[in-house]
Image 1 (cartoon, helix red, strand yellow):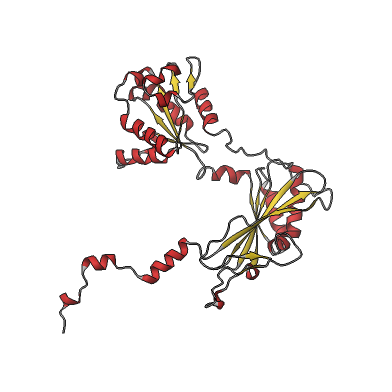
Image 2 (cartoon, helix red, strand yellow):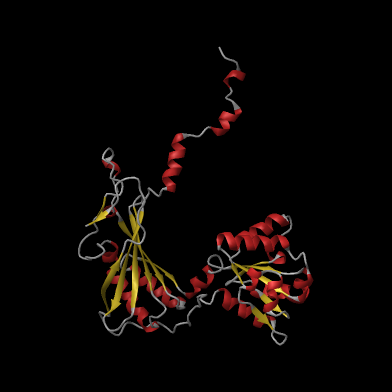
Length: 357
């Protein structure tokens, strides 16, 4: 007979004990054994060089398929109605067809082709089209046109989700915003840096600045470290105060230089305010090698913020003009099948790889 004390496992062993089933399940998730594969179809206009893409995504675990329609910004707005009509009529064919032969069903076989477990075999042939169509355009489509198009697609058993310029603008608030770190001398905070930080911080750019990024209770050093780690662009504001301060922000400056030298994962843009860029080598020869933005006495903070925005990301997407009511297409058969590219993302597995036929 054992005592209660003898029945208790060692605390260290209990802490390190791992359920092997849970471990393998989590490893399976990391290896993406659930399986997702995508094929892309390019649909070309019969009359000119305009085209758009239909991308089909297959999920093996769910046996489900949906499609994305991506319309480049180069396509004129008067083509949108024709594209909506084409996709409505062809959606199921594209979702359930082989990449190079739309008349034949997909034959993407052998995702997990373990001989010992044939009942677990998963293929794209089993995937059912859910009817969901995601339509991407940079134009702004009127709400009443969206409602009409959604209702029209419903008559074909399709669920249309339109992601237009409004979607692009909103999603930019959460993703793809370059992060900028403003390095500065504390004496320049009131006269320049505070206003500049607030001008720059917004949907297109995220600025790490203590009055913006810190909230009560945050640990300063930890938050600073995280800001330096996450930043895409380091902008030292070079002033006479900065030049004359022998101990200027040594911690953050050294951290950024180390990150640049070892990882090459940060861009450096000096902002020279009342200081010639040629003097940068007095502080750092590495810093002097970067082309600086020069802020002259006649320039405004708005001018400086715009210069920085163009230097940080000149390709920030802009939404299109609002569209007038969409008109029915003037011609039928505007589009034909073009080249097809795929798969977009190879499936990872420990079993036999897929082959298309």
